[in-house]
Length: 112
Length: 110
Image (cartoon, rainbow over all chains, first blue to last red; front, side, top):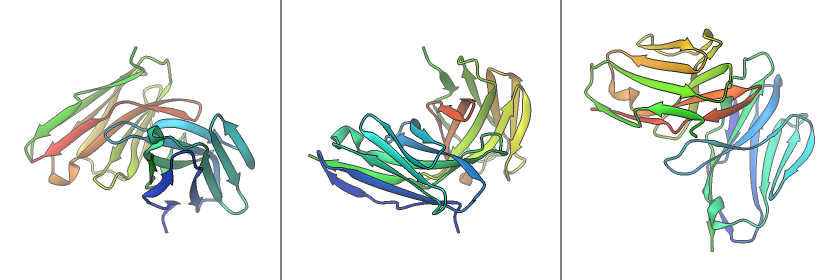
C-alpha cells in the first residue's frame, strides 16, 4: 500500500464548477498536510497546508482534513482553465525533519 | 529575484559519465532538499541538509552524493550515470515545514 494515495485522473471539470480532489494516507503519525500544484514542465507550487481537523479556506481553495479517517481533500471553487494542472498531496510526520511524502498526483482539466 | 535556483536547467549526457547539479537559495532557510521526479511524475525525496548537516538520506544508490558547502547551497553529484537516472531533479528549501521548490534540472542519460 502506498503511503499517500490519490486518484490519478484526469479529473475533467467544467469552467465555473467545483473540483474535488481526495487524498488518503496510511501513516497515523502524519501531522502536516500540503497541497501542491504542478503545471506541466514546472516545479511544484504550494497552494495550501492544513494541520488541524476541519476546513481551511484560502480564496477559491478549501482544504479539508479528517485525521480519524486519514484523508485530506482539496476543493477548488469556480474552476478556471488556469487551474488545469496536476495537484500533489503531501504529508509530513512531526519527527521526520520535514520529509514530504507525496502522492502520485491528480491531473485536473478545466474545460471552457 | 529567484528564491531557489538550480543549474543547469537541462543536462544530456552519456551513460557512465559523472555530472553535478547545483542549487542555491536566497531565502535564508536552514534546510534544503533534493527530490527526484520520475517519468510517471512521482516525486520522491532523496536527501536533506539542515545547516550543512545531512539529516535525511533515503535509499538512494551511493553513486549519488550530496554536498552542502554552506546553508544556502546544496549540490548533487552523480557518478557513473545510468539510463534509470533520467528524471527531473528538484531542489527545495524550507522554513518550518513549508517547502519551496526550484525550477528543476531535467537529466537525460543516453
